[in-house]
Length: 258
Image: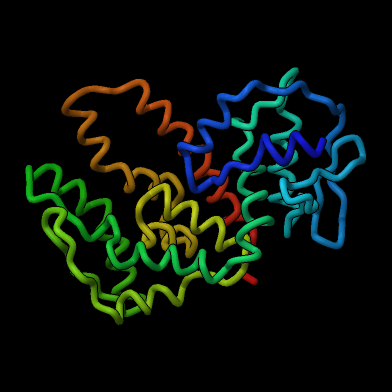
């Protein structure tokens, strides 16, 4: 099984294009009958026919809570004749957290913080008025939360020319980035997929729902599709990204702070 995990599940969930490329590799046949959970020193481990699942770095695939471990186990149970990693976003996310985020939490936190300096939510369209209104209705409540609950005031910018945000606002919101590897890794994925650390933090704090955060991240894309029609390939990529997003949102929901 080592080849399976080292090669088949090594894609980073923060890189949807790489994940998609890996799902194009030949699928491998299901080799197990039973998926169970077991308490282990590392947490709640997923086992296949009584054997622990290993990450690409040969660590135990174990979760901090039974609830999120059960979500992962369900991915393994749902596999049929062939194992399709494209349908197992939580397994891939867990691998990345266990093998990478645990080792480099400061680097991951810094990457999230960099988004705060050029966050999606502060860059507004100059027109048309209906798009401006859609952006305002989706994005203003999150900026209001940052301002009213945390004293972080971000500056809105028309167009795409970079504008430096107030250092105090960036540093204030940076302090909300969780230190624990699981929530940190999930927050990084949500940030990368939405282009907004503010949306990710609002989701982590329970200020917005997963559906609302996803919709807010795609206001511009939805506007363009409304004008020019749907692109089936773009919709397929978006569906793949949504599965990665939902896995990360589940971690934020089911794994507590600490």
